[in-house]
Length: 590
Image (cartoon, rainbow, N blue to C red; front, side, top):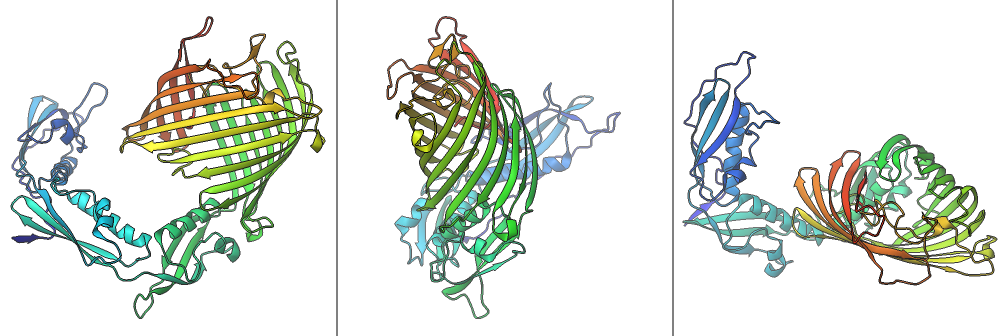
């Protein structure tokens, strides 16, 4: 038995020597093809994927760059090492001119034997059992040995100890090789759990200390855990006041005792913002936006600003004010005063109003909020043949919302879920002239199937009830379906009740959206989707006449957001309907 600590991964011979004649332009030759020999366990395609040296195609030409090629040879050895071939080497390589300006590259590989994982042992672990540690490993006994998997497993073990407060835990893998079998022993130095002594905050020049401390869930006497650190960092980043947040236990001069000061180091963001945006959607077409914000007023974290947005369907001008902590500890106040002009095919309405929302988070993932809305609305264009029951409105409403949020990313989630349940009541009791009750529910689930495939599913439902002495539901408060963010394959608002061939919305709605997302190349994703649902004219009615849409699409993640194009087909299109629709917009549909 001999001990293998850190074997050299990249030992190979370079026996090919070539002199390239310069072309008239002084450039190296083009690469016509790359050929491999000796590779019985890994395909040519698998090897080429790790190389920057590529074969020329009619749409893209690649030239031979010697330095890059040397890096590619090392990448090939690393690839083999991560598949268990620890003695793999480049036997030889050579180039052959196929014409005056193009070469063929030949690479001969010696794969060697494949090493596999033998016995896995955990040593000196007391706080966590072997049964708790085994699921964290990226390899199993009998699997091909991989230094990459071993490194990831070591990192997972260290993180697991950090989750239970052992911030100084160290994990050292030791390898024993017997022929082609490698036994792995993880020697663990646990140390002891770290507890918070006091919180030391630094780096804040404008922000008041209490604005920072109230977002930190670590308190003196608490166990210092990885989860509490991450949650505290998330809370601080969500305020929008900081570009950087670092939280770490302080190391003292006499060792690392169980009671430590915790240092919170922040880098403040600029308090003033001037933002411009441009977007495109199938329904809105070109969309322009701008905003000016002044944040962190007097170091309190409060914000005030103006926002505007314009498209072919809507014009908005809004004044906004946010107080992260209002009156009660942890209660957030959001206030918006606005003018909105909405332009649909059968009506245009000017909405002048104000909204005030009070919300509070609890139990990490949950939130409860209430919203008061006061609106005076005037129709400037009304197709009375389709919207005969709508008039100028005074909306006075209160909305209560409960949410549960565990998504890992708000803009492009890969796992987690979102649930929202809300109820809105409007009526004469608030001095309005429209009385109705609106109930809605939404649930979204993101399930990673593999590293490149994610399943996303969304269920939405809602119903409206006319109530009180002045029962009426304005058209802009009703349910609509069809379009970029609803039933794909159908035109915007084309699913549901119509009058005079114009959409008038309904009093009940059910939508199901299902999508399989597949990573194709770098920031490019593909998607296959199946949507179903409808809108009904009556309250609390969910009939069987469901409309269906299927199709596929592409998504590309840019620095400005996700660009999405979907091509959807109607299942059993009705007379006069187009069989399909293209949807082009920014952001995921769910």
